Image 1 (cartoon, rainbow, N blue to C red):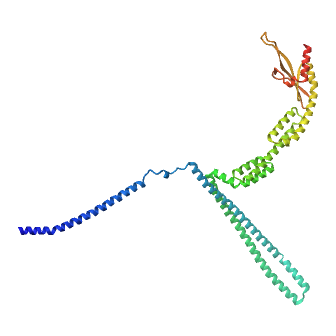
Image 2 (cartoon, one colour; image 1 turned 60 degrees about the vertical axis):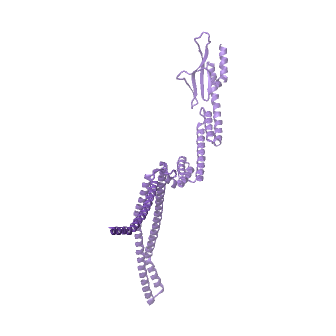
Image 3 (cartoon, one colour; image 1 turned 90 degrees about the vertical axis):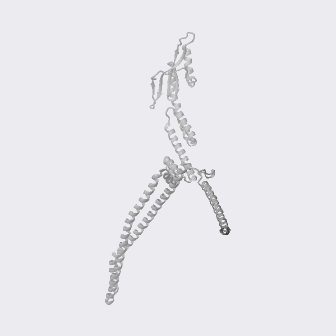
Length: 422
């Protein structure tokens, strides 16, 4: 038993270091695993923290996006539309110009080919005459074998020349025919090309009509400005105003616009002066001519053309005053007669008003009666020089007569007549 025990103890003593060593290795491994696990936890925590920070919905103030306004979007679309329409219009104009150049070149080439063919044909038609003339001269100066040999040479040379001219004529006619075929084909292809370009431009203009209008106005600004200048020179002022407005809308050169505006303003003044002069001359010596001429002179001053109208107006004033004096001379005896009949005449230019005094009684016994004026009849000078009497359709009364009537000699004569009667 003791031996076994000792052996057991020996075994224990022998195995204990091994167990201790194994336990130490296990502890070291556990420590390493614990360190690795702690590192993994730390890295996972860091990754989680970074992930939460990256996908946070709370942006800093500097990263908040500003929403565009509808006006900004409209401007961007309009700018893009303007570029597309300008490019399409430019391509269309270039296509038209190129087609016109090519058409002119083909027409010139065809004309040259036709002239060449015509010249060759004329030369071929005259070949027989040249041949006969040369044979006649040879027959005149040569005889015998020399004449015969020369005739053979003439026949051979003219036959060769005839063949050359026939070939040249056929080639020229073929070239002209080919050119005509090319012209016909080009007409079709050019028309199709223009149609496609116009359709594309029309499609863009339909999508943005306002932008298209501004683009066209800008493209034709100088043309409209030149047309406005010509319209001013031709006296078409309304057309000039419309064309000038289009040139302004197309942003034409401001200096040129100012020059045309000055031309238009001067033309307006000239036209206004001409109209006023015509109206002044139309007044003539009619009744009320002086008053009407004064009104027209005031219009001229307002329009700033008084200096252009003054000479005509002064002459018209003088003529009207002479005529007025003549009419007053006719009215004086009539007015004197009216005073004698108890009327108070108010004399105007070609018009005499006959007023009579009417006593007006009041209901109050303390108030004296006063007088009012009632229009009895009116005498008007007609164009044939006859004074026509007219009665007013309704009663016309006045408390007081106008000051010019009260200061007239007929008023004083009427007052004297009334005093004498009283």
